[in-house]
Image 1 (cartoon, rainbow, N blue to C red):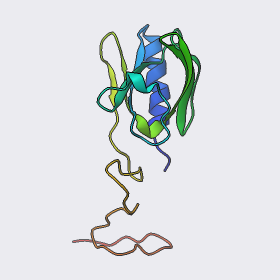
Image 2 (image 1 turned 180 degrees about the vertical axis):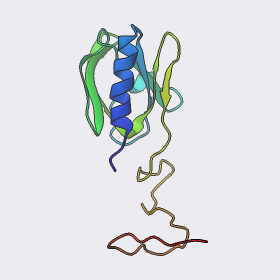
Image 3 (image 1 turned 30 degrees about the vertical axis):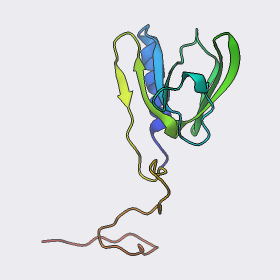
Length: 135
């Protein structure tokens, strides 16, 4: 299945705005492809205000979030792969959601094989799934 993260980011952003609050996202700036102002990165993360008054042209696609904004008066195009968004919340009350890693997502600690542990090891056979009766 596709990642649920883009759908949840869009939904939480809309919910936060509908409640007259300010949506903030927390971004892991170390994820490949992240384009944010590095001078504002602290401890490998950056917190960004994505409210309509702070950004222009916000697009939350299925693989990335992008917009243009000014940082210290300097305009910048921001590009964030959605796997780098670790949380979205309302500034005023902290309500929102933090994201964990999803199955099939790249391992943030390094390269690995993209297989899921099936308990028995080895390759999983292709074809139709099978069920086993356990008594």
